Length: 307
Image (cartoon, rainbow, N blue to C red; front, side, top):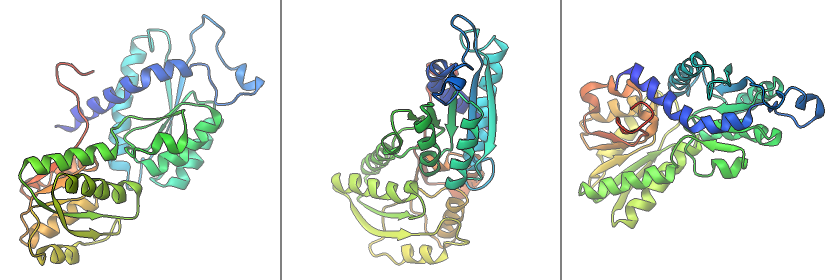
């Protein structure tokens, strides 16, 4: 998938998910007091839907948050060129950088809510989305994560929190079923305790894979951002029996570093990844990425919002 198409599909998926919520939020200022309520447009008049975007424009999540925002901006431009949502509700975006940090996500969300936004978009990961979403929940402002895929995300925040992604438990089950269908009976998993995404997905996969009759022959851990994976590559190479498949939810910059390490060590075992590696960086790995299969979101070309 080329980058421009990826941006448009991303924006379209998010736009379709958000459209109804945006209309419902029109006129809301993120506060229940009388002064804030006076900002709402009178009945029958159009209002501007003010969307706050609290996402990682820099840092570890920028690789997903930046193109997601680019795709969303395309949708906003197209909608506003047609007069707004339903031809009468223009959309305004206010973007603030969370620096891919959970604490900063909460700070930025508070700033945006203070500016009277009607809708909050949070980063493409559950941890910072929970931090930001809890403030939106208190203000009763709808919030949605680009791709926060933890199944506990809405539960951890409340009824005003939504996700544009499938749950990690669902994509792990899909990967496990795929592995079983391919005839793989043994697997090695690699995760990191540094985020809910990288710690829970290997566990979800292992539960599903073993329930299918498979065996986990090894489990590894890494620190997000570590400079090399040579020790882990050596551990995998020493496994006896060798695993039929390797599963990891690592994403950039860790996934490319890990993949280069194991391929450099002569390990050509198939690798199963998750939606975190659906990026141009993975495609740019070329032959190194041979044997990599990953789950991701998508739409049918003739039936989705881009059809």
